[in-house]
Length: 80
Image 1 (cartoon, one colour):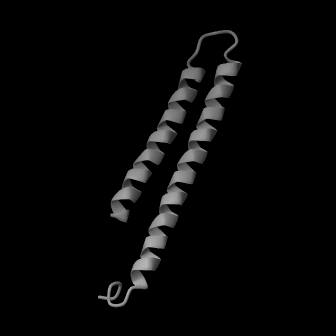
Image 2: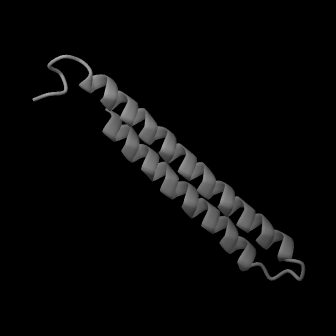
Image 3: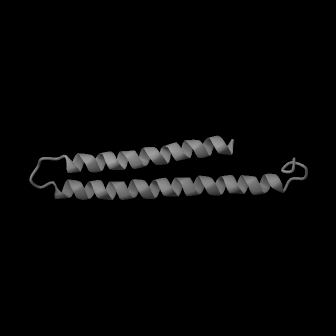
């Protein structure tokens, strides 16, 4: 079960990074004269998306490690 949740979390992380890049591309493709603010918002959103993705992946990995530790501490469960 933890493996499936990790895969879904990794997919979420990739999606967040792609959405951050997409927002940045909208700012870079803008033809307006004052597009500096839009580009700044794009870079800020990319940084926030990257930080959120790293947080979610780290949180899910810690949960999987915790489940592994508790499963191996059970007698005759973690040892084949």
